[in-house]
Image (cartoon, rainbow, N blue to C red; front, side, top):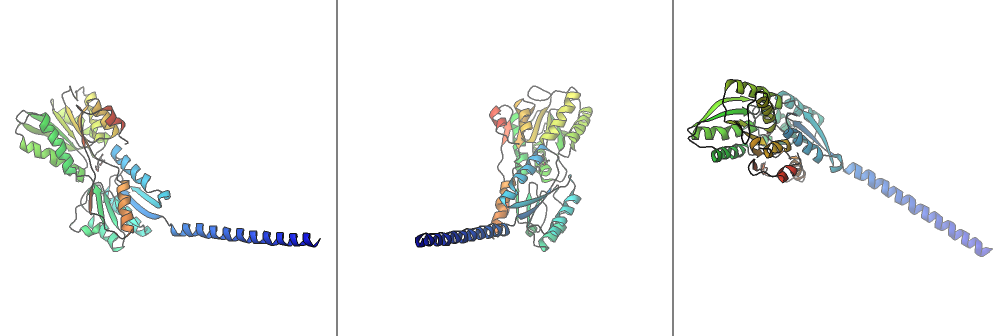
Length: 335
Ligand code: GZL
């Protein structure tokens, strides 16, 4: 009997001990989880995006959304400015009010940012510029810039023209520009102007902006086609305007592409743009890389560690010639 009683006591002690251990473990787990939840407050990033005007822009937005996710420890507040600077300025002010950790700005045009970026600086909110550039004499207004070398892009397209057209032969050029005053338009247009100035037979017949959109690209091209019975080259500063221009040429029964009247040069090299290049409709397509999310995230994580990343980060880009492009080039295009 006594032995059985001893056994019962020992069992009861063991049970209590185990219950105690279990309780302790539960407390530790709860504290650890709540601790990690407290410690991992998401980093809030306010992103003022130009708009949704093109395939390129949608890919750029997608890259930012896929990078700045909750699971990566971020909260992204994205504001679409519908290509209006005043909307971007208002968004930046809102971000400051909200106390975001970082502001990312994709500036619609280069001028007019000093005032609002000074407000961000005074509020101690670091600003990262992506894609196009701003014009300022005070580069302390932003921590870093990630984007393309648009003058280089313009130069690559111009070099393709010089390789494929005779310098002294008459060449009638129509120029469909992007959003006037944007770095992409300024750099790409400079590339074309340089080779027009250099090649005696090359004439700029007509120039106007299609604002990087397909709808306006079509409208402007319809006007070009009414004004000029013959055009040799359409220098088009992005794929979406080229898609609009091709619709206008189809409706006006004006041929284009490898065997057509009008050779099209385009920029962005989106998947749809490369499909048109593979078909020979676009003769040369200069890539413009929209996948800035990972690069911006790298900059923010370095800034958070107190490091000073390089001020300017240029993305690598190539160009596609209709005579050389492959199905593989198109298949590999993720946007
Ligand atoms: C280029 C970017 C331009 C694209 C257009 O970096 O700013 O804006 O070329 C887009 O497609 O609308």
